[in-house]
Image (cartoon, rainbow, N blue to C red):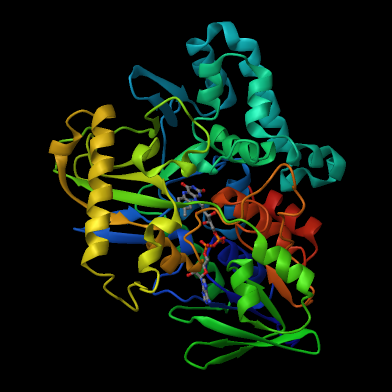
Length: 505
Ligand SMILES: Cc1cc2nc3c(=O)[nH]c(=O)nc-3n(C[C@H](O)[C@H](O)[C@H](O)COP(=O)(O)OP(=O)(O)OC[C@H]3O[C@@H](n4cnc5c(N)ncnc54)[C@H](O)[C@@H]3O)c2cc1C
């Protein structure tokens, strides 16, 4: 029998796991090496007081029958085991502004999306339809399933269009402009920077369909891991890769912190490209490449307030809130300390015992890494805990209290419904995801220099590939799509896409 070619994957984020699952099914012998006690990267969960919290991913899009994620997960055989709940058809997201009672609803399904916004902005119906058409068109053009019909130049133009400018070009109505950009925490939107393709691909996936997890986001990671192991692969936890050793322009082996050696024919790195360069022992990469990669700007980080409600006190809301305290909807990650936070999101989790009520909620607020820099020498993860000290605890408490005062404006009385809360800072994200600064969505895309900020999946080392949110696009949808494309390095992409299409019911 022909020897199976071996692939070692560094990191078990959604990118690594999807590549691993596809390539395991396609006949490769896969070994995934994950530094944490739990697999999944941003799909990890944590449990407090018997309540499950998603550490990052709260909802996913494009996963109804016939849509991209559905197709790929169906091919991988995991669709039917996912336990999801559809968010409100007419209000996946509620865009709100302190001081304005009205909530603007972003619906799922293009007809609903148009209908709901046109009800709020009747005189703007034409602009709303034009916007929806553009978003849908970009979603179609960039879909991996329509690659043959879309030329490079046709797509490239969307990399160079600034999102804020585009929105302003389709409507003069300032409130509608704000509402259309209102969920920009989904992509950490920066004015004069965020390319339209980023906005469109993220927004399109959620307009297509939007679901929350019934029992935590890590179910995706567990199911993908099962695909890998059921095809003869291995997923190893607590394995920090500290070195990739190159000889004759090929990576020969990965070495872990505890000195274990993993040889393979191919290596896929699912970690940040800068971290990949740091651990790669090779002169093959030119300094120009290294300089470019290391100088790329990372996205902002985040502070999370994870609330457990007193049982039966806070009615469940099947929508995600995107709330602004003032007038500004862009660039909220650059808030001055005294105005923080001007933007926050709230994700509720339905109580299993008493479904009318929420059992918990997560409030996410941008936070600069610099705010926690003074504790950066501490590293705290479950498999290697470290106390960051009393001052850090006070810092977190103070920030949590500011957030509680802020959300009380939108949800009066919420404080009284809180049983307890937990917080996570940029250091938590740094330590659990393995970046330098807790960046939430990897490298910032810039419409003014679209190709400079792109990191190719292929590298100068032929058997070393980069996958994950730093390559094409962040988000579960974005990373899964780019991971399928990356698998085209190993298998014929057209046949793979055909198999994926054929796997649908
Ligand atoms: C706060 C937050 C909220 C988000 N919300 C959503 C959402 O609601 N919906 C959505 O679709 N997307 C969301 N995203 C984005 C999405 O989660 C990410 O884009 C995506 O999951 C990133 O996947 P990845 O494949 O790049 O790997 P990552 O998730 O970055 O995982 C990388 C993995 O590599 C491991 N690793 C790092 N270094 C090493 C090493 N040396 N050796 C071994 N292993 C290593 C890490 O431990 C980690 O497991 C959110 C992200 C964040 C941070």
